[in-house]
Length: 379
Image 1 (spheres, rainbow, N blue to C red):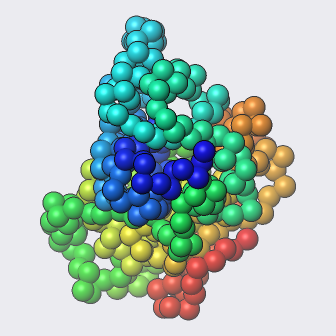
Image 2: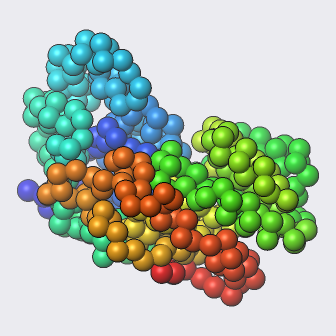
Image 3: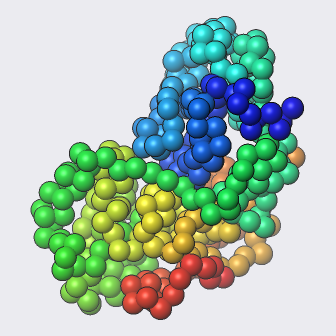
């Protein structure tokens, strides 16, 4: 049955992803691109959380984006009463949408560790869609710590009958409004693309365990600050974190807080180098073709690092008993990595990202900016 996916009989595809972060959206763009290139006559629709929909709209190969909240599935901060009120209507409302959409192929993850999985499965079954691709067993087979997750996704597509060239990369398309906004922003801070080398630095994440220590960030900024031709733009929405950096830094960076996704794309595209912990903007930079240095600790740089031609990962080896990167995709694991679930290291006061020194990052940055290095892994 699976080989039928690469067929002229498929006209309307829907892929359901009710839990997606920014980085996952960017990495999956390579998958959506292959599907669209193989089936250019078919429309590709994505159902995802409202948060992810903002990012999905910047992937040029996607035809339609639908927020999953319209079916009563709420992934963000929503009251228990509201969830309970909508729960009985999820299956009939969602299945009705799938029927009206006349989809003939649907992709679902079907991972019971994720909320709403059984209800989504029931809605798909009731919709009567002809081709149902359950990703759970395929992810378990193809996604593992021996290779990058994008390569695993592409391997899944090959098993399903899609033609994969092997050089596919995530793809994003900045808009014109964002470019104009960022030009004004750079001028405001006295940064000129013509006279300055711009380093984007994203040391924070929504998860504390992935963050790089503020003292190390301050030291790195001071090292780079000795070169007047280089400017650092610090990307962070954590006011408390930024304040701690600015308390000790002698060469303060330009601080950028929340940006609409279009503006984030445009500002990132102006960077000559992007340095980041494991978070969404890192994958954005790689997708835009910007050289990237990924700083990794509790997650696997080999699996989830920046995916591009000019990217590298710095990650120190660890014998931590809680380090199980395969757990993110293997349903055989009853729960995700413990330190990831608790958002704190279980054996140290600091995170394993803090094993990375500012000197290491500064040397890697210098090598990138002077053309002495390329993609790779540093362990």
